[in-house]
Length: 283
Image (cartoon, rainbow, N blue to C red; front, side, top):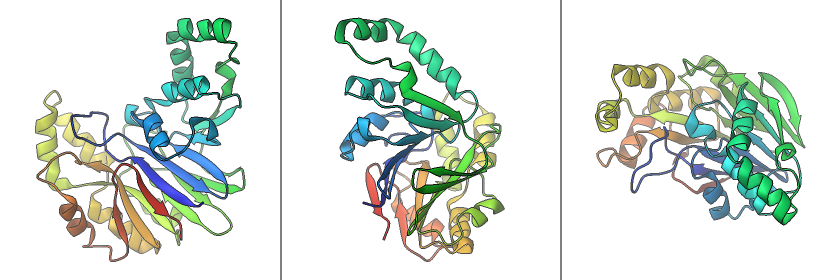
């Protein structure tokens, strides 16, 4: 099975009744089951995608905004209670090990109790955390290429490309539009790019209610308008484009039609407007 599943497609950490869940993506290629990002809801999303939590071969975290790693600790703990007894390599920015140590400390009563009372293996070493850096590396049979994207004020924020013998997938991560993304995505079977409707920013900022003009500034300088995502896909010559990490995605005044109209200004190929649980086969 070679496919990408968009487990959580909402941009930002807040959820409300009826909204989608924050970011997480499942990549299944050449027998590898890889999770990219672990926003709130990822454990449920994996199960709904018929993937056992114990079957993950690797986890990658693109950057340390909460909507991309808030549920990493709970995911690993839940996998452990479900029978995980193998080490999972985890690649993420500097500081991810600090998060893991803090999670273990917060859960020490429960973990130590289960070690004594249930005979579980030690939880801490099941997460083999590595610092993610720009460059190329092997991930099982896959080739992983990592570049820095543009997501101020965070410096350690990354886009990823997975290549197998017959398929290629690029995940933009959270980013403003950058020229390097075109090079990274050249000829890919699928580009999953974050996207923003600029016309929806006013309504989003008003709905949040407890921020100020800095929220607008962050959105405008750190994310990619949908038409720019389409332009990048066109210039890279990708086969298909999926929009993900949608901002906004929970405003009834902005529908799938708005996303299609905006993106079609610069992209005429197959387009997927991300929804939670959407499976995109790599054909």
